[in-house]
Length: 244
Image (tube, rainbow, N blue to C red; front, side):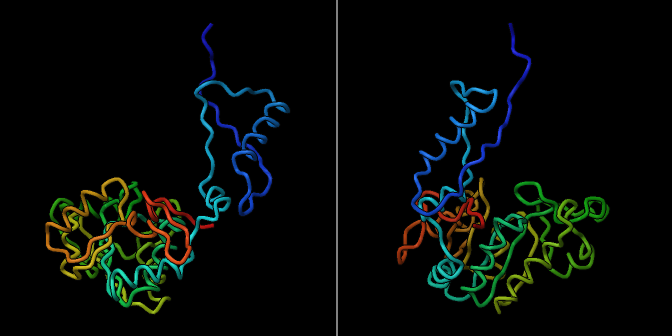
């Protein structure tokens, strides 16, 4: 008889996770107790997902904004070009705060009409009416502000240009922004670059290197080794990092 129910997601409540806790033991025991008290059973090939923040907390593997800022300062020496960051209140905004604290000037290049994960940065109807060509057109800040200054994300209600500008300027750094889908366009502002995209980061870094950038790092190259006993990830650095 074929089963009638497909994939089912179940949230498991655990005790509060603290530094150096036995996370594996806590997860296993919590699932066993949940099975005993409820009508479900784990089967072969079932998947258990654990939030990254509690993994980091149990491992004591996290960094402070100041620690990230110090590394940014040492690698970029004052000015930085951030290429293709996602629009995010949680994942990227704290990284941007650290970058700004470690910089004198933050130049940003944003994809359009959406970021890498689909967040819109401009009104689509206006975008099409203006016949903007995303394959070759570079929009300067004044161009964007003329046509899209009032645009807010449809789900969060946030104007991400204003939001990111405020983060940077609150750290007493200067802010400028361009809109293009060509990574090399950041070089009109600075030759010190940080590829901040996720799935296309290696391609972006290669384009920047071939286009003459003098400094090229990705988020996976920031906090990928421990400095002064701070947290790190040797493979992904700050990629996928989140607020604790």
